[in-house]
Image 1 (cartoon, rainbow, N blue to C red):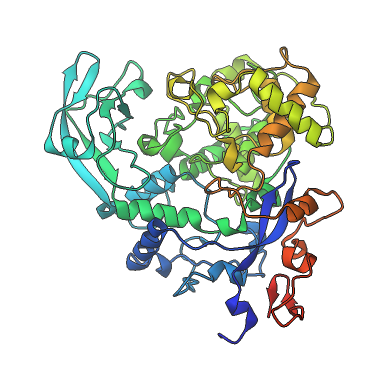
Image 2: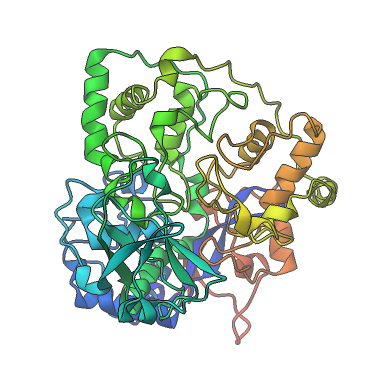
Length: 524
């Protein structure tokens, strides 16, 4: 195999966002694993994950419509040995990176049935630190007793509270440090807000802390597929634009929806649909509470219920960088049914009707001048107070923000392009226009003109231009390559049409001859 040219390539076709908001494909070198990802890969091998999970998207049987782009040789340049596997008892993991947030993976490894009720995957609880800690009544509610385990897990700095949300069984997930080491900076604070005025009678809780091995494993899994860049933004099966849709609220459809809800949704959203599933202790942000009938992602005015089409879009696309994945693989009729059942969980659906969708104007052409105007308005409108000067969600107000249910909420990090409500400029404009109900993000329809909202929307997208969606780091592309990709004359809208910077610039070998191209990106 070593004499085959494709076995020596590191290049892949990679989707990148341009300065002007388009997503195009370019040939680019795959990156090696970090030390923590390498540790995780070793754990993946040791624990036998490859027995059930394959890592190869084949160009047959419509796999590119189910998993994502067909695999390319360069993706495996650093996989020695490779982990293609041959059995698909579990789903293929080639494109699993960024499909779920880290929290989902921690819940999945603690008890797969929490997030996939019919899963046959074993639990991996030995990859967690665990400690049973008594609780006592304090001035502000329940408090953890000061045990050696608590002192080992936390620095106990009183000025840095670490909020812990137990589930009804007393399991409490402790979010690890990025490097997986201990102790975690801060003092633990039990928060029973999710239970309202009916908190569980807990005498002790089970602290669950991922080990460094598990943190590495999750980092490795999140790396998978991300060498192909922002491919999810142009993955047709999960990108739907639906506004007006009417799904009949029939008893048969509701019954079918209840079955689908119990099969796919109950672990996070809970039996009552109140967002208090057993997995919720692991998740940030917490799952949607359907019983109050408030939804962030809508095409309807602020304060209105969403349309059936809005709900269908969210279920199909998922909510990026949260535990809510894309459900495009679920048959349409099952998604329709789930929507009818969700609408039975809140009385608001009987008392109100969704208002007509707001008609959004078509976007103006993106120009450098429009981006410059958006940058000025970003400062003027004080977007930086929450989202930060560099768009990383680290503004001075970021740590104080809470949603309408009094849960902490983080502003979006624009630099990775993982937008929860959609990552097209139309999606950003819709959010600017309609706001996100239940959150501190308001509507700017009355305070900004259409032109100003479009300018900010394009500027917000530009934070993720040329960025790796996993790390947010900028790719090393020449000014000439960027100019070519910014040009409307360069299509590059498919992996096989990816712009090859070396071929475009006529790069020659040392002997002066151009390399023969065997396949896009594969040469001598």
